[in-house]
Amino acid sequence: MNPSPIRSFGLLSRINHGWEPLEPVLLGLLAMEKHLLLLGRHGTGKTQMVRTLARGLGDGSFAFYDATKDDLISIAGIPDADAMAGGSLRFVSHDRAIWNKRTVVVDELTRAAKENQNLWLEILESRSCFGLPIAVRSVVATANPESYAAAFHLDEALLDRFHVVVPVPEQQEGVAPTDVRAMVALALGGTEPPAYEVSDVVARIRSAHDALLREGAVARVTDYLAALVPQLLLMLGRGERRYVSVRTYARNLPETILAVSAALRAAGDADPLPLAASLAVRYAIATKAQLGEAALEQLHRGAVAHFHERGATDATTRRQEFQTLRALPDRIQWVGKHWIDIGGVWTLDEVEKAIGAMANEATGRGQRAQLLPLRQLMDRIGYRGDGRRQVEAHLVMVTRQMMAAAAPTLTALAERHAFGAQGSHASVEDTETAAERAASRILTADAEGALLDSSDPETVDVLQRLVQAWDTGLGLGSIDIVHDLLTGQQEGAHVG
Image (cartoon, rainbow, N blue to C red; front, side, top):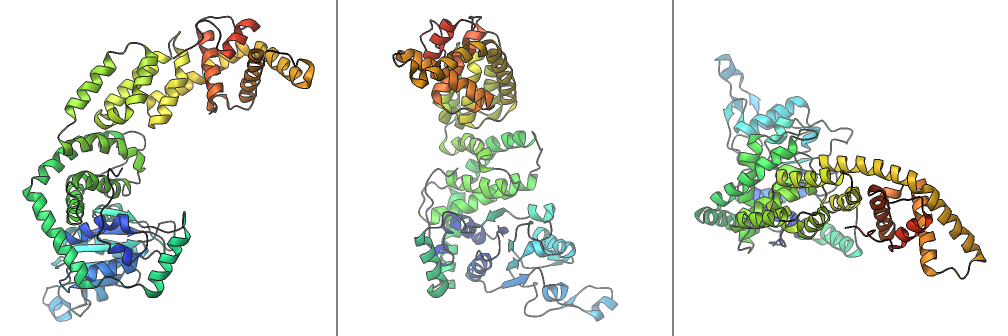
């Protein structure tokens, strides 16, 4: 989803190897004092990262809590008995108490029991503790996957208070020797960035945020979200009907886009909004709602046009081009050729209608050979809507009926191929040999239940010609006709 390379301050790479792509998200959210959650298994450097960055925020009011051990006393202090006797709730504070802390790190949040999660929910949402005001502006939490034996399910209401959920690099796949050298160097002799350097970057990000607001970034982000969110909710309303709160898409998401944009601008990106939006959608929506990134890529590409002040013209032009095409093969080919363009400007409803109309037409008599290229198009563009189920069901039915009609002739040709392979027909012409081989491939794939899943272009081409012949009433009982279909010589056999 990222439209351009990510510029870096080079801070995170001096703490943990492989974290560079996360730098604008972590630094941007921290600088703008938003809540964020780092998710990953033990030993990935989550705690070390947040400790180092939080200490560099510059105000000196930083606290670290372990959700597995810290309780009411270590977080708030000891309840003041005298005050309680007089009907008031007060705490006897101590140096680790939360009351005057501006930035708080909570380690191992998924190991916190339900009652402790409720305490952190109040702190994140209301910036209060037991109803008393606190100075906390930003909470940075780390968590293990819920698959861990000692991990509790993270309450959805608590999760929703975090602006982003960021899965961290676990360095388990694709680790090269150079990666190992870099990790060992950091572990044994690395020098973390000093607090003053982090503070300097934070100041630059806040300055860049102010500049973006003066430049009208809020209006551009609003236009982007006005295009993205309705399509997002429409997509989520299908299937499993996953929920994204108004808080997430109307407050947290735009604030995240602006914070990440500020970090990118401070690092030297002159036009950071498109890239910031792609990162924000990934970490504020995809990871929180447990959606695949691919599912959101098309939505982002369509909405990001509003950052470039284009979209309506491109969309209208492409619609007009598509509507002028009458032949189904032409429309299938056109969508495949122009998908990069139309995927960025057509809405989900428009795509659904276009694919659905082609699917309906492809199931009609005389057009059913187009079921194959239409399914190939769906595979290419990642389409998984109702039209796909319709196409696949008809394709199975049509192929079975065609094979029932053609099987005797194909078997006769395949047996001739097997006989010739023994050396009895060394002088058989190439076209005859090709037809016999094709018949054998079709029968073998059908017997293995893999005919419709074949990735061999020749097999797919032959299958399409056979379906076209069957669909138009061409006799598949004739060896001569089937021979010519298998070799592409039959008049009118070429389709698409």
